[in-house]
Length: 441
Image (cartoon, rainbow, N blue to C red; front, side, top):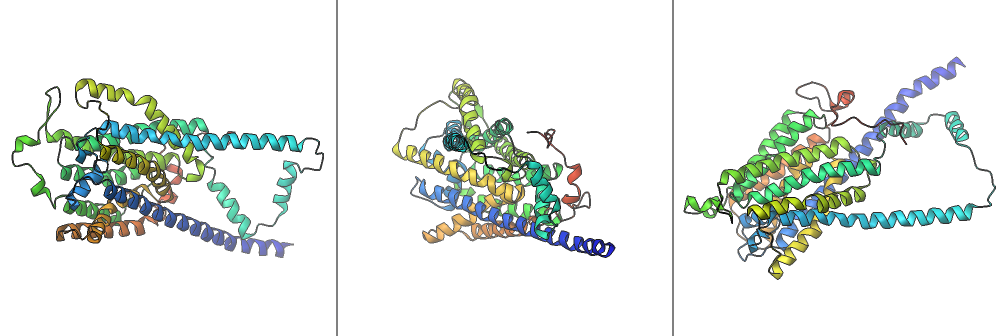
């Protein structure tokens, strides 16, 4: 008897190590899937840029401009950042349709099963019997792996009310981040807006470290800086010919005669970078795994809250003259707006899943891949590309590869501040609000 116990005791470490390796393989597979989904988002955003380009001269600077200000809508004179953001965000409400259909279908199926089950008096095992059989089953590596996953999933699925509450916060942060970036293009240069909005990498790394979803390492700091440098090179490549000859021409005058300097636009672009970092960290901290949440329901709530809660902002902007309400006036603008809404509807859904499968920093740096992809597009279309632009795009690409490799070991890499990996800091992780007890129904 003692020999059997000793043998089983000697097998346990091996079983645990094997289960850990299986769990690690599962995490790596999820990470690779997340990277692939991120690349799909980058492709969608860049292709939408090419599809909705309304100007005949499509150098990289203009392509970057149309990417930032919602894919060329500003180029056609439709400078309505709030309306564009409102329509794009509200389109998420369409996700409530498949959710409602699915719920009705399940209800009908449940009723049919209940009617079919009437009069069936066959044997059905009690829950206690299932528990006993589980206890008596030897702990193989496979069951150990399953138990380990069960422990990890003390992350109970979010209820509909919790999903709605999270969607409300996300809607607020997402709307401010997108509107402020698009509005900044009315008041400052595209180069300034691009450079300042690219500060989101620094904000994401810093805020992610505070909430223990990003470890602070030397490689991450270097890659964020180099990625920012690549964006700087690309953004400044055509600044000379884009800047007006008369400095007073850069001052924006509203319909009410209010004069706003480029500094106001720069502030909006920086605000966008901050709120972008806040909403990706919010989702990572509160969701942690995409298995916890119904993404269709989540985005459906985001769209619903946008429709109901953000329209008063448009009224204020209209009355103050900052943005007069006008409907699209050309077929090109309508087409660009519809394409933008369609791509936003799909790409943001995929983007959030990619972030949950990887890390906020990876997807933040990964968004800059639109620049290398735009360079490739220019080569395909046989457009001239400056050496400075090629160099900047190459720096962005290498930075993404470096941060992707580094962040794949995010849980294991020792942090520069604490000197410990994130997985050892899990018990002391900062939470935005108290987590609900795991025992709840």
